[in-house]
Image (tube, rainbow, N blue to C red; front, side, top):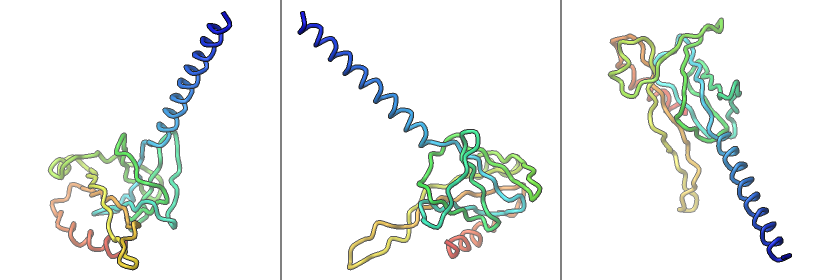
Length: 169
């Protein structure tokens, strides 16, 4: 009888431990994936860049469960945090008075030319590996570009804007 009681008690403890562990792991994982709000200077034109995981970078503020990614006037945001999930993003143009204008997220450049401000996210890029004693040092620059489209027919500024971003990066 004691053996059955001991086994059932042990079984209960194991099940409780597994349940508790899975709840903790699930809640930890849900906090690592943030929703993001991008704040872009209202007079900005061209390509924006986020550079990730740099010591000199900032840690974004969190408001209502959303990380606030506020671009400076040069369009290059440097974060000291790792890359983020592309999920639930909101984009706004923001003027000096704090007034926001919503920009839509698009998934190809043709979608954004007629519907007001739109943002197209590029792919995540890692570049600038350095070598030490003929071995690759794993630290490179991890960044992601975002193209801001307006109702302008002149989209040829892309090349100069990207070259400028690369030299600043």
